[in-house]
Image 1: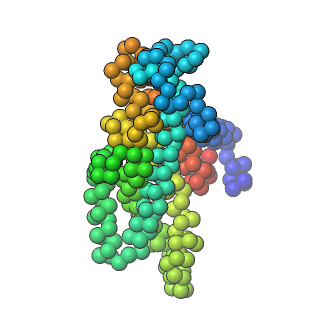
Image 2: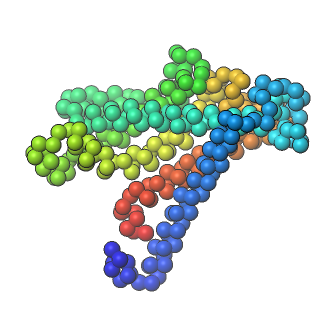
Image 3: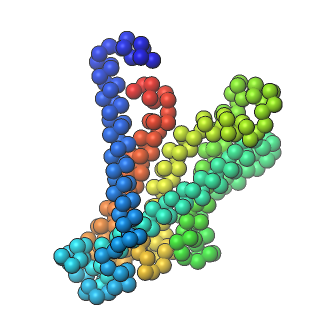
Length: 290
């Protein structure tokens, strides 16, 4: 590899180094953006400016030394609500990704190793589930089980599991069609060994990138559920519920609508940048080209 790189013209080597630095910068920018939200969420477990139920700040007070982001229409400290919202967004995102990832991987691998008729049946079910929007599936689950943080995680995780399962099935099928997999089967390797030794090591980069992207979608789905009143109940404040409560006072106190929207954008962009960086790290062909 080093000989190949040395043989390239100087202009090409400089361009490749520049591309590599740009990709590394993309990953680190994403890590910083997500890290800011993560630190904010962790702080909420040990410290909050005010109690979430404290309404002594006065209705729609502007930013001040006592309330850095002002207050909402009930007199609650807006900064406190935003910090709690960061914790809820990350809890829902992480919980949904873990649940959807585990279920999706199991279903996808089962479909890849199943008999033809069972594989076709599972694929048809996954196609039907994917046809339904994630938010619609989440709304149905939350409506049936009641609005709560756990219901939001369950609903979004189940909705995204179909996407993960379909991707896992496609990737696993591709790996299982390779010649060395056929040789391993002939030599007596059972399916658990094939999964651990060959399938998972080959599909994990793509699956991890997809899960990172699903994390951002889960955060948006949770904000949408909360905006519709189907998210975490009071006194916990989701960014979506803050937006919903601030829509009637946006001209009087615009920060109540702007701040949660900006935080949502920052978190989703950060997660997407991290996913893009992970794709470059996990894809050996992209590394060779850089």
